[in-house]
Length: 56
Image: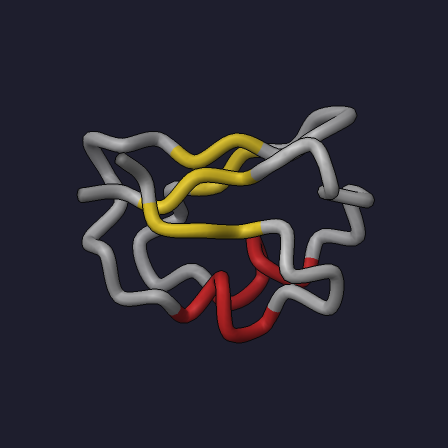
């Protein structure tokens, strides 16, 4: 199950820079492509705002 980025995202780019598959795209709030995400959790661990959570 892919991770998701919540509205708490401040678009700092930290998650995108550590994603091993490049599943995260930029925007006002970053987005994770669920088809590319390998559910490793690296993005969630790196997020300074705790805006990334496991998807449902």
